[in-house]
Length: 116
Image 1 (cartoon, rainbow, N blue to C red):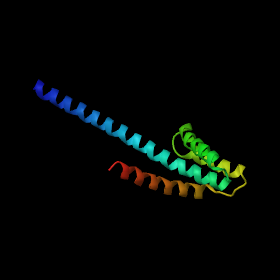
Image 2 (tube, one colour):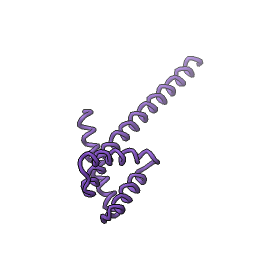
Image 3 (cartoon, rainbow, N blue to C red):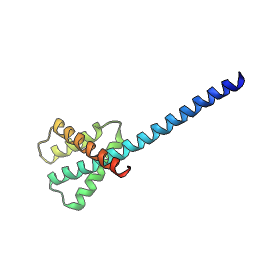
Image 4 (cartoon, rainbow, N blue to C red):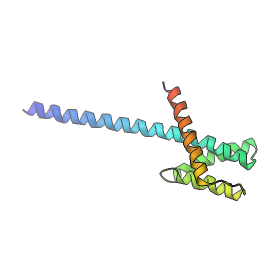
């Protein structure tokens, strides 16, 4: 009986460790995909702002870094929308979020292709 109990506990421990490892991999993948989405979002916005290439790359980095301010996409949306407003360019949240979804899908496909 003691052996069965140990085996069950060991099986649960193994299952828990496996779940934790999968969760960690999933979070790392999501981080990579989100960063891949934010960079081109920043580059496209910079292009609309009329920034030269070197400034556009710096701006794209700022967009990627803005995602670390809080969970979710709201921090990126606030930054980019605020920058559109500061540059006097019309952009609404719905349009921006739609483009971010499109870029997220594209980044996911790229990540999958690289890791296949």
